[in-house]
Figure (cartoon, one colour):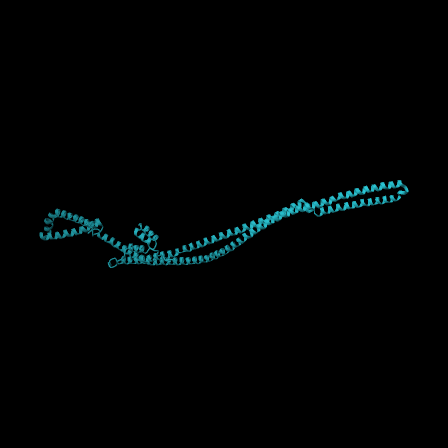
Length: 427
């Protein structure tokens, strides 16, 4: 019996008993002396009737006191019973609602498991598509690498051939410079020879002058001879004729000398005119400049060609290095795509755990509805968590599990997990 109920009953009994004692104490004389004698009832019968009246009054008084103090005739138990009945009804309603909701958990879990399966399928499809695209990229990179390798080999051969040609061109340029120097020296010698010829031709003018002097002397001698023949008279007439002929010959000789001198001057001027370019220093300078410029251009062309071949070799080397880096990045990218298998297996574990949770909630629902059936039993959810922990294949899963529960990973389990081979299956 509850302590409060016992106190209520005791309090009511004491109040009623006290009231009955007060009534008996004060009404005893009146009851026996006046009432019983007045109605003509014997004392034993009156005592019995009085006892019955007192007990009935006491019982009625208990009810009245209970109603007065506790608002019901059962010492507040009726109200408590009604409250308990209402609470029990509410508990049953809530229990039915909770059981119904627990029965809905498997459907909810099935939806989640279906969504997880869809996520797994989508990620798997995306992973395969990424792998196929990466494979296509790898094919392109492989072809590029092969092309770069072939081009590099060809470039190496071209560079070797170019180096040989560059060396040959260097020798040719040196020979060209030697030829230019020889050509310039020959031009200078030609210039000197032409100048010598012109000077020699002009020197002939002095010889004609000598002949001209002799003709003048001869003319003077003929004139003196004519004068002497005139003095001799008839005897010197024949000598005068000879002197006249000598004078004419001297005149003709002087005329011939002038023509010869003019011819020599004309020949010298013609030689100077014909070899004016060779006699010109500016022409020699232009020829020297042109030949040196040609040699410099050849040398510059060879240097640029060498730079071009070196630049081509550098470009091919950079492309080959980049293609090798792309191939390595592709391998790393393919390895990174393996995350989908890890994700798939983790999602499958979560899906299985949701299935176990659904079965567990179904058992709990039956337990709520059949609370008086002691044959219904279930495994605690903590044991299911331990089973889930034992199925983990990665240390990160164990760490996350322990952190979620606010626990530390067991040292033995961590060491065993570290030494165990990986159980994740990769494609």
